[in-house]
Image 1 (cartoon, rainbow over the protein chains, first blue to last red):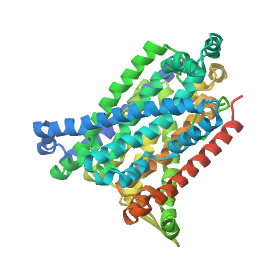
Image 2 (image 1 turned 180 degrees about the vertical axis):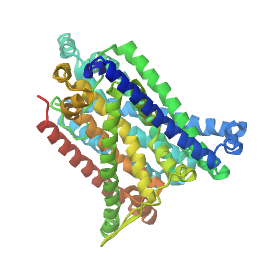
Image 3 (image 1 turned 90 degrees about the horizontal axis):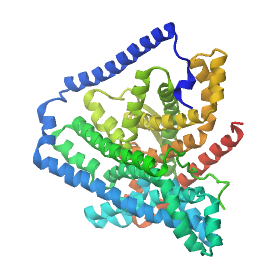
Length: 283
Length: 231
């Protein structure tokens, strides 16, 4: 339902009222921004030495290489892991064999219901703690792979089920075996439907890499701590890091929109069942 | 196993904080998210744009950064919650709702509201066209049509995505543990430090409670969804 259905074309009195609302909203937003700027100004947050660090080449390199690059590396590792796991679990959940289906189902339910942070900390305690920075790095990658893999398993399953049933029937009629039908016919078509959902999961994974902060993994959020401890510029650090995350994620979202247009068209995006929901379509 | 038996009060108090965070931020984010959704489908262009900017910015920022803002940056520019100081003494330990807790609640509310808004907007999109047209035909203004006709149906249609958002909120409360709220995750970390040998028992116990909480919530949501299904 488009927005314009919800209200009539405004008459003269309504137009006047909407003008009033517009002015009030502008005033409220301006007041909020002014309050923020005033607080920043009066607490001395605009002083040059609080922002200087972001133009110093040495620190800039630290932020971009140790921070952004590591964040992107962790996100990329997590996405690759999640995709592999997601395909395996998604296909596993569609299996005809109870012995394959049930463990996959339990695995997905468990890892979707578990906070990623807890997964990271237990991996860190069991494996990463003795291996320093690289240990923490891999703990983040593993935790995010497991969580996002469980989420993507549902996406894959829904994607395969969304392929018109005639496709599989035709493939069986040609004499293809079950694995071939899945590999040659269903998965390639399903991937096309799933691309937007997969890319928005990339945004989730990228945002979640910041949780590595809790286990001293490298990354954009973690790099903030030594900077604000050294320069006492907590506010600028948070703003700059936030802007960097938003920037990277908007690029990713832009890619998702582009991919949606190119591969899916204006079809309805895939809807995925939530945790613990019994999907009537599931076998 | 002994570590769980000896520390069950400590663990339970951690989950008390988790559940309090969830309930307060859950209600707050539902209210704020509904307001944002109404702004986003409303007739005033500038309100729509404000809501869009807010939702886009917040959805693309990591929750940890939002919470860090309220914990370390906010106090520097006068955003403090020191006036909130509720300590409830129970037999098993204290429930402390102080400035760290309040900051976490505000951060979680602001963050989750953006996702609630998106879920509700998908619900508004699912309401059949004729419903809104009929509401307009009997002369309801935008606010009346939203309140009496569209939003009640949108809520029902949006129940599955709303439940997903709230389940994400349950799990996201653990992030508050990194900004000094002594909730379940923080207590698990303390226990892991004190009893490193029993780490799998500790992890198993906390994981089990989280899985149970999430499954209970999704079961309730699923039943509500079936009862409230739009014809």
